[in-house]
Length: 218
Image 1 (cartoon, rainbow, N blue to C red):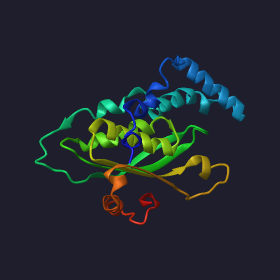
Image 2 (cartoon, helix red, strand yellow):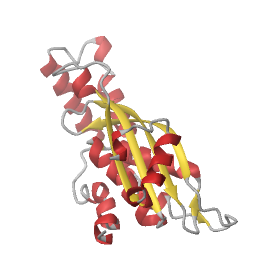
Image 3 (cartoon, rainbow, N blue to C red):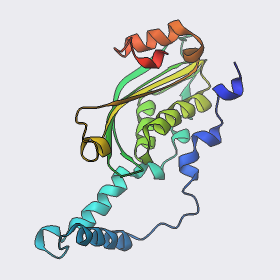
């Protein structure tokens, strides 16, 4: 198997961060003015009492929802631990809850991620895996890219024997508008290294996350 295909570059993993470089960020006042425009467009009056503070609240919420643009997931993984007494079995963090927003409608994506890797000499603090998930989730996303970015970054920085990521999420752009398919979830996966090449390793991971029959095994 072509190793160049299996291991994307660090630059590719950081694409979302680099894609906003050089773009002038509007001021807080401009952001709040844009919210007032949307309120008027929706048919309401931004000057009424209940909406007076809404532009400020929305701008503050956006700073939190899209705080991932201000952090570098690669830096989060650079502090590792070498003293593992030879531990080389799977490290798995299950059920990492996250909220993201789709780049097409800016509607919420609410889901959970399962992240695993097979260490090669180095391990990272488990909280860092959750931080990487949330760093990428707190950007405008599509689920396929979110899945790939998480896996690629862990693979590039830690250089393990393999990385596996499975994400299951509900998309507000489908559940609250359009086809209105309530209760529908989307599952995506990214398998690198041993998880892609070795069916038993992949099966072990899927069993551990409670989804042994997942199509991610295909």
